[in-house]
Image (cartoon, rainbow over all chains, first blue to last red; front, side, top):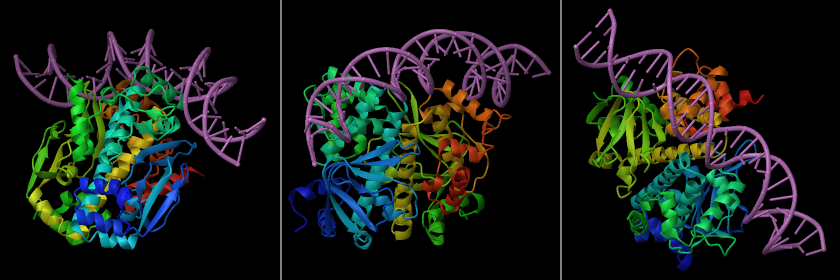
Length: 253
Length: 253
DNA sequence: CGTGCTGTTGAGGACGATCAATGACGGTGG
DNA sequence: CCACCGTCATTGATCGTCCTCAACAGCACG
């Protein structure tokens, strides 16, 4: 009964993309004995959380952040439906890495106890799918590092937006609307809020983002990918890879 | 006979730190049927490499880089003895992520065929150690992202040096000398070569780096960690964690 | 109708990039 | 042994991107 329609679909898409089999997904969903709703701006996982459970985002968008000594919030990644919030804590409980997870929109989170996780991992195909999930996470970090390294603010912001848009689409969410504030973008891109605002206005001027809405809404994905020099193939989702790979080749004509 | 003294020790330390058992390490080393020597500045893995084998660094230091459209080299991570160079390619062969691995010093690399990897993974403790290796990689990326985001060049460079020094120590290498050029630091920190030079001179002026040597040699690790606000506990190596954690607390008095 | 959060705009200054030239070192070949 | 060369380190000067401070506008909330 938990393996129902919408809430399972993004997670299912994600797991299948990582090589899990159809019955793996069913079994996984049955291990979810509890679901939690988290309103926007609340913490999904506090910075000092130590509960013996893994959280998987079912609906909504969250970010993982680290707070620096000067109070600055540094967003290291975003989560979309199907993404794990704290899988690392289950596998490497000794690591002391103070990370919080905050809901950017109203969210639904699946909770799985460590004991149930143990059982799930006895299925080799599911275990390797979760390993792949960790590797995909590493690849995403790597790509972001590479984009943070060089390039102007315009390119960095464009890359960030491309990544999130592509990841949304990878789990079946095809809205052009990105659910985070300019403040979030600033903390994620390592730029000041003011400069992010000006950068976004530049993107609006280029007709890449919508001028109508105050929110961030991508109208010209092709151009955005070109500005970011974004090649979404690293995201490895088979269905998606095609779309964003073609994207790039089109713009190179 | 391959499981001999020095070449196995860093790898053994690393695997044990990730939870592998003593016989896992032996079995792993026995799977290494071939070793390769790579001179400094040569590619360990070319950007278009597709060989069906996994490489593990046994001795020396390498970097993984990505080349941008404008020819810029962006270094996303360094490898120290015991680190995998291309484990992700084995687990996620479909991913198109053009990454090269270059030797920074003369290196020794262990080569393991995919078929032998398959056999190794049938041991659950070894499989989960490798999963942890991927997660540790992700944690390292995450920490670097967070340090790239905010802060001055001084802090970024200091953080980079701290990370590499700590990771060297984690695998039993206690030299204060870091084996890469200022150019490498620039490409890794996302700064210009000129500015990296000035930053390093600042660190020398603060008696954090050696003034005598042209190379990068850390003389005051405690001060370096303070400048970087570096807390090495995320590296999760039990032996190391203590050292660098105490480090931090000392400086906060 | 205030209060708070996000978005927007302006002006000045700092940090780091870029361009350009020189110095130091190691290796190579004559 | 020395001249030559390539790579890396170093220095100076100028320029641009982005940060900071500050103020205000729009919108949602109670």
